[in-house]
Amino acid sequence: MSEKVLSIDKTTVQMLDKAKKDGVETAWDRKEILKASCGFGLAGVCCRNCTMGPCRVSPVPGKGAERGICGATADVIVSRNFARMVAAGAAAHADHGRSIVLELLHTSPDGAIKVKDEKKLKKVASRFGIETEGKDVYDIAHELAQAGLNDFGRQYGSITLPPTVPAKRKETWEKLGIVPRGFDREVVAIMHSTHVGCMADAEEMLRMSMRCALADGWLGSYMATELSDIMFGTPHSRPTEASLGVLEDNQVNIVLHGHEPSLSEMIVQAAEMPEMIELAKSQGADGINLCGMCCTANEATMRHGVKLAGNFMQQELAVITGAVEALVVDVQCIMPALAKLATNYHTKFITTSPKAHITGSTHIEMDEEKPLETAVGIVKEAIMNFKNRDKSKVVIPNVKTKAEVGYSTEEILNKLDGVVNSQIGPMQSAKPLADVIVAGVIRGAAGVVGCNNPKTVHDEGHLEVIKGLIKNDIIVVVTGCAAQAAAKAGLLTKEAKELCGPGLKKVCELVDIPPVLHMGSCVDISRILELVGTTANHLGVDISDLPVVGIAPEYMSEKAISIGTYVVSSGIDTWLGVVPPVTGGPAVVDFLTNKIEEWVGAKFFVEPDPHKTVEQIVERINEKRKKIGI
Ligand code: SF4
Ligand code: SF4
Picture 1 (cartoon, rainbow, N blue to C red):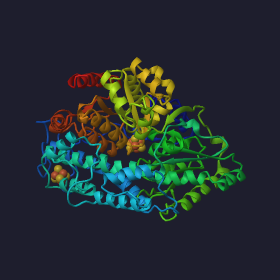
Picture 2 (picture 1 turned 45 degrees about the vertical axis):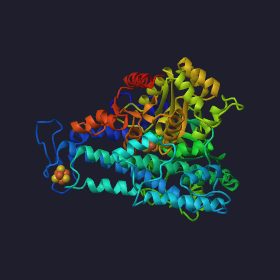
Picture 3 (picture 1 turned 60 degrees about the vertical axis):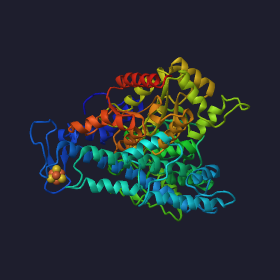
Picture 4 (picture 1 turned 30 degrees about the vertical axis):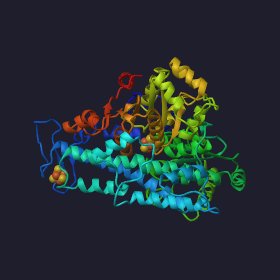
């Protein structure tokens, strides 16, 4: 492998060195072996939607093959490929949301999963028009779950939008015909329209993509977040630690990786059982150390302060430390390479979901009837594996960073209450946030989200963008693997206010918050929508009027494409640090980076340079401020 800089995270560099010594490969090696990506795929002009193809058309207009065998142009092929990415990303969130809804349907006062946040249950239920007065909590929960399920499979009308969606935004969507109907229907509709001989109009294809993505943001992800809070608790700020150095030398290390909180919640409960701790001690360990990876980590840390071992590109590195007894996964963003890698160490790679079997793993399927029993079984597997740890192979990086996590929308409003005179009020309102934005004490707000991608220097995009924004008095909220990058770099601490411009620094001091707020996992981007919508409603404007932006500096997944599409469709300008596979379709590029703004008041920007990204954002935010006269 060449000696170019692969990561700015020290523990990553250290573990890549160890990987070399241990003779094991990582995603970076595989990227190197694959050499340059195919130019047709990069530009999005390769189609294999039927067996007349594959067809590769020229990404340069007027040069080479201009149509596939069926006659599809580059723009049609690119738009169909883009739509399928949106559908796949949205489907991942739909299925995640659906399983959370089903869990709510099966909650019971004596079951493993109960209702933890009654207040939130009633709030969400009334949004669905469910009567809550004098009703049993579990009856409400089951009715809400049923209403949610109906929206996933709805055949008539449209999904239930939360009141957070400003009236003007709803009107815009209605006018454009992009209010989502049933969620599953939108995914199916895209798969239908992208079939050979169906949709051959790039703009209409993109309109469908927007409608499907909106179902993701405002239903699938939204319900996943809201109902997880109802069952597992709405997060509040709490301390944790981040980096691969959170693995412990003499404890049973269990790394939770994947997405759905149900698995991690059960494992947390199991790992805290006194008999499990005793069992660990009987095996010579001091205890059980739970850590998280990717979005499962974000879920578990938001509610329990579980330590953050790392983000997407570090999943293999956790195993390479030689100190992980069990890597327990459910769905999404799990590299299949882990199965082979784990055979070089004592690590048990345990899959748990019927949706994500991985050849070579140990599969212990989560029994939905007895989730806690399954979790106990998994924790036992990890404990009994402690004795197999080969001490000569163990290297745990000596780095741990303090972080503050748990900033749900509710927690942010709680914190804002701290600067409101309770005799005057209003309490639990976005007014203080709106006030400092209007006054210009802070210039605006940004959501930095998304994955890692070996096409970029690991974590660099996230950190440079975040640091640049807070320096310019733009408050940052983070989710997903961006959140973990921020945590590892110490940006999720109150001390990070020293990196801020004077206005943001003052706000952090007064409200007693870090300048970068951890809002959770990828589905929790719906929390950002909730906060932005609440602020827009408070000011009586549309979301697209607010000086608010979204950025995915190192994204890689189809989920991120869906997220970007619903964020833009919701009226928030979005910067992508990795070029999406659309460059071969000039009309598609023009639509996404230009024309879409006429439709929804926001557009995509593609900028791989994080410093230029910050400059563009500051400029755009200043323009927006001017436009609404603040
Ligand atoms: S759908 Fe058209 S462009 Fe795609 S593979 Fe078939 S013939 Fe080729
Ligand atoms: S941010 Fe991206 S890589 Fe990380 S967990 Fe979410 S989708 Fe997966």
